[in-house]
Every structure is written in structure tokens, then in C-alpha cells.
Image (cartoon, one colour):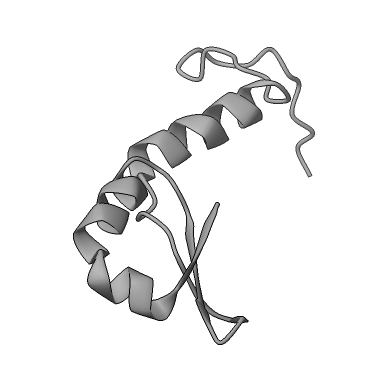
Length: 75
């Protein structure tokens, strides 16, 4: 993460936006106090893939089109 003053951010905004587009996070300060954090937008495709990969570790995957071999209790 890059920490910069707001005046430096204003003066070199294009340079910092290039860093952000490459995944870098920018912390903007004013008089030594943190005032903003600028990050690139979430890539929804990559985020969905990560979630599916995480779910695949615990999910039971079967053929959902074939009937199950379970006996149903008729009431």
C-alpha cells in the first residue's frame, strides 16, 4: 500500500491511477491523518471464481439429472 499526501495525489493523479489499475492500494493523508483509501473496483468474474473454488472444497457434487436411490416415506 502506498501512503501519500493529498496534495501529492492531486499533482500526480494519473500516475497514482495507473498504480491503482494494477491492483495497488493508495492511502491518502491530510496533515498526517488518513482521509481516504483508493482501490481498484472488484473484478466480479475473479471474485466469483474464488468463491466457487472455495465452495468446491466442501461441496458434494453429483449428477443432478438422475433419480436418487432413496426410499421416500409416504404419510
